[in-house]
Image 1 (cartoon, rainbow, N blue to C red):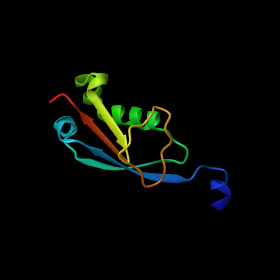
Image 2: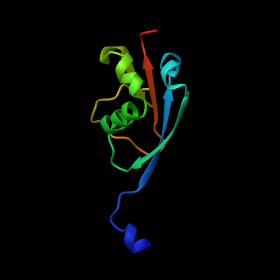
Image 3: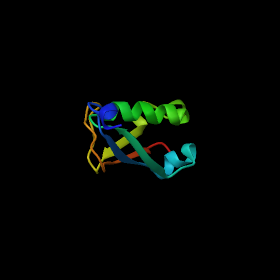
Length: 92
């Protein structure tokens, strides 16, 4: 099995949390996400939109706020094991 996994990226665990306004759409306060080492915020964002299409449908891009460990990310910001990513809509 070790030979099979050789060269594959390691997995990382990211905690995704939704603010009160987005919980109206997601019906979920958040959950852990497992991704490959080296993933960036843009990939996670697309994954969240695929899992919760109502966010993209009901919120305009400028209404969404995101943080990684309390800091505003760029689309290409790398994610690391243990990061906490917070999503919220400023539109109530």
